[in-house]
Length: 212
Image 1 (cartoon, rainbow, N blue to C red):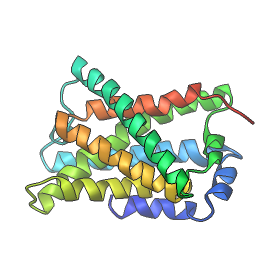
Image 2: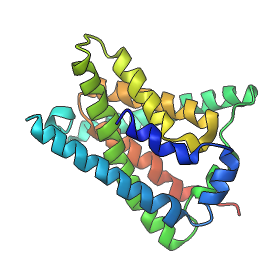
Image 3: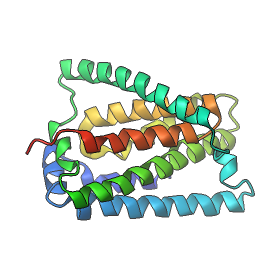
Image 4: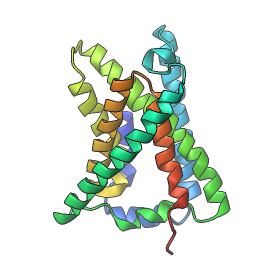
């Protein structure tokens, strides 16, 4: 995962505006479906790996879902979005901003909205499983570390690298956002708050006003 995820972002490096405009020509075929398929393949790899490790998905944070997980997710979204908004403002002051063309990837018609819901569910489950559930715990175990700092930093940077199409500003924002999710995972001991928050974050894009 440490190698594969950054490698998948290589085709999307370059001028973020040009890349976003290209992907926007057919987001379902160029962005949505490839992302969904790739991520579920990664989930399958994680599932097989945890099975062979004799821990199962429960060993990486798939505990029994509870109402408190929803409350944690809501609180997390409120706090994290406020902090990220402030960070985005600070980055824009030093000319490091996320391209406005990112909105071109948002769903614009009924078909795109339906696939976007599937994409949101996929991202919520798979990305949290890979980057928070598996990478963080396994980096800590492999390195025989007593703390979470290195696992959190490494997994968050790799997570951010997968969003190269958003430019340097997007990389910074997403990496820090990943670190916030990591803290949520460590604090609650469950992936469910992260999955729920991640899903709602992506799903909410359906309600963003589209300006052609």
